[in-house]
Image (cartoon, rainbow, N blue to C red):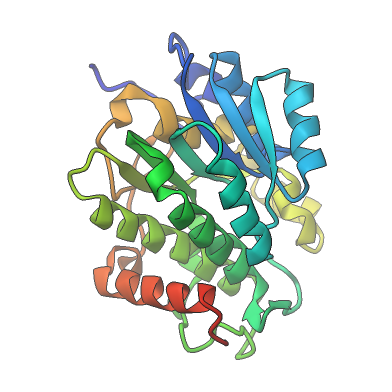
Length: 294
C-alpha cells in the first residue's frame, strides 16, 4: 500500500481512519489515563478488543467501562514483579495478542527512589515491561507487534545505561535516570526484533512527543516546563498517534527494530543502536528478574 503521509500533527483517530480492527486484540499498559486511555479509546472505536492494564484492576475496569469498549481489565503494578507475573498469568488465559503496547511509565522522580534496591524509573519503565513482555511472547499472533514507549528524553542518558549504577545512588539526577530508562526501552525493542528475526513478529520503540499528561506529575513546577515547551506540545490525540500507527497500521507490517517519532523512522543516540549493549541489558534484566541484587 502507499506509505501514509502522517506527521507530528496527525491524531490517533486519523491513523486508524478506514481500518476495521474487529477480531483483533491489543494489550495496553496504563490504559486508565493519558496516552494509554486515548489508545484504548481509538482502537476500541474501530472494533478491537482491549486488554487494559493498570495498577489496580478497578482502575483498568473503570477506564474500559467509561470508554464503552469491549475488553478485559487486569491489574499490573509495574513496580512489583510479582504483580507483573500475576498479570502475565491472567493475560495468558485471554485471546492471543495482535500487539502489546508498553505505554505506562513514570518520569523525573525529583529524589532517588528505589525498588528492591534498584532506581525506580529503571525498574518500573524497563524491568516491569521486560517481565511482562517476555512472559507473553508466545501469546503474540504470528504477525504480533511489540510497541515500546520510549522518549526523545533517552538523549538525557549522558552516561549511557550505567549498568554499574542501577541503584541510582551515584550522582542521582531525575532526568538522566529517566533518560536511562527510556534508552533501555529502545534497546529492549532492538533485542526483541533480533530474536524475532524473520518470524513475522516485530518490535519497535518510539517517541510520542511532548504531551501534558499525568506522566509529568512528579516534575517540580511542571507548568513552567510545559510553558517552556509549548512550541512543541502535542494534544493527547496527537501523542497517541505514533504508538497506534506502530501497533495497527498496515504500513508497519514487517517493520521491526526501528525507532519512530511522528509516525516515521527516526534516529536515536548511538547507544540506542548498540547491539552489544542491548545484549548486556537483556542478560542483566534476566538476572534481576531472577532475583539478583543491584
